[in-house]
Amino acid sequence: MLIIAVLAAGLAGCDHGTPSAAPSASSNRQQLLALGQQWVQCLRDKGLTRMPDAELSQDGYLQFPAGDYNWKDDLRKHQAIINACQSIEDSYPPNAFRPKEQFSADDLRKLAAYADCVRKHGIPDFPDPNAAGEFDVTGTSLANGIPGSLRDKADQACHTVWDGSVKITGGSGGKK
Image (tube, rainbow, N blue to C red; front, side, top):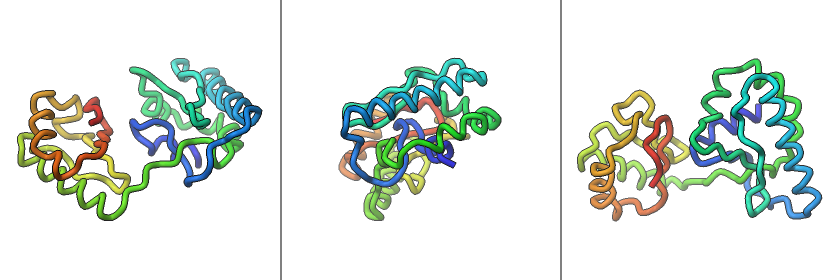
């Protein structure tokens, strides 16, 4: 089910599928945008009234920027809405969404070492990364955010272990 893949993408946006070329022709982009907006309207009609408008990224991928509203979490609570709009979702082309970032085994090892370093430098509840390279803080003391001073101290101490993007999900902890 496509929505599960979209919801699994976390705070990075609407990632889905395998790497492939972005939609390139203007008419295809407009058709994709129209399909995305049709899905949004279906969700709104079924009760998810705060669903953001569909947009196309500069490289032609469909996205649903939400600002302060976490529509993915809201949608997870409404299986009936997912089911009601499934036929629209099923008609998305395979390259509708930006491909997920792929982490190598070495990257995941470095992210685990980064997590260990962060724990040693003042944030003992910092989780290990999941297979997608994300740090899920759900159910931890960090779910309501990581104090900036602690995060800055840990980032400063651990940037030599991992200097790439750090994606935190399951709370308001933000991103590096």
